Length: 193
Image (cartoon, rainbow, N blue to C red; front, side):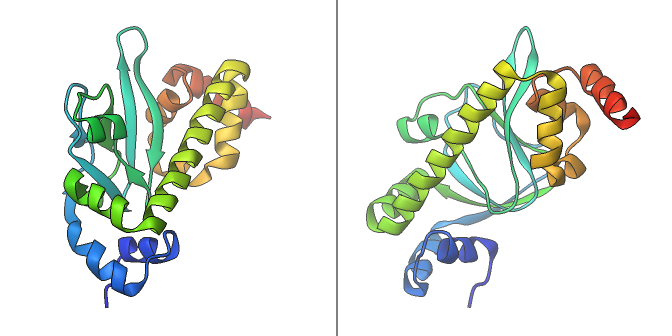
């Protein structure tokens, strides 16, 4: 019996039965991506949805003025893709890069559409996950708009202590919408308190 992280996620988070899991799991393929490797870059058509079994990925934009701006990090049991590009077969403006050596399970568009049309619990679970992601992104946008850089850093330390240990500080700075130098100053100031 398969007890992979994907299998457990399908059973526990999406409510698939063992029989349904045995139909869904073969639609995925394993993929290893090394640290700093990209799953896709700006201008590509995204061809897969990715499930993180082990490791950490980040999704980011490139901005001519501000450089890289990390949108989110995904770790174990997280899903990564860019659904507009994936579903509409259009070029993406985003990039996805491995922050750590990562083991993934990937699924192509045809198989994804099959799952979404034949397994209602998977469809509803995915809709809920997208709603959660939208909520988090809106919350982050509000935080960047109304909070000071120090407040954003302190919130990150409180809410994401594991990411703080796993991710280089310069990437955390891009996530918190500040320069690495500003983040260093804030960390020194907080440490002196």
